[in-house]
Amino acid sequence: MGVEIERRFLVKDTSVLKGKNFVGILQGYVHIGEKSVSRVRLVDNKKAYFTVKGKTGSISRLEYEYEISVGDAKEMLEKICIKPLIVKKRYFARKGNFLWEIDVFEGENKGLVIAEIELESEKQPFEKPLWLGEDISEDERYYNYSLVLNPYKNWKKQTGENR
Image (cartoon, rainbow, N blue to C red; front, side, top):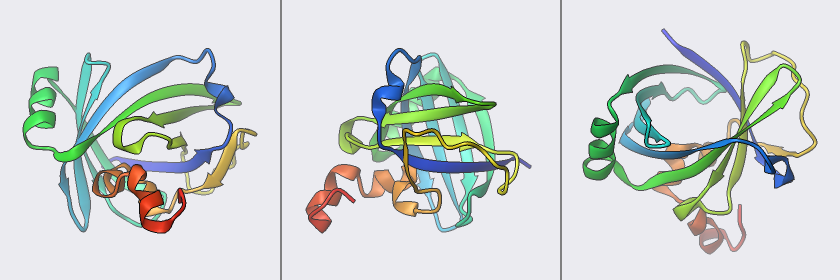
């Protein structure tokens, strides 16, 4: 059984991205259910993965991930995934012993920038970089599957503000 323990934050200063490597990610959801979500992810058109994640309401989730063929991923993204697809660039930044993944969303979720860190336990301490903003680890609106159902571009229209 795989378990993912992840903290997520808004990014308030994107200058950290300058000169950093990134990969392009195209991601779609085959299923968004009460207990789990299933997604297809294509990374730089070179690698592809099928992932099932359990929905728990905490920062720990069951996660099962399998590499699949790029051709299968492209076909699933085009023909069976819920639209819109998630389009983002993922940057990588080191802080201490941790590797931060920083997603800069495009398309329907343009303007949203989220940093995440994987931990070994929910209580594991880590130093927060100065460029981090609000902790959104347990705010379901920011989960990628939620951004498919209610893209970030619609938030301002719905509430009169960006969040």
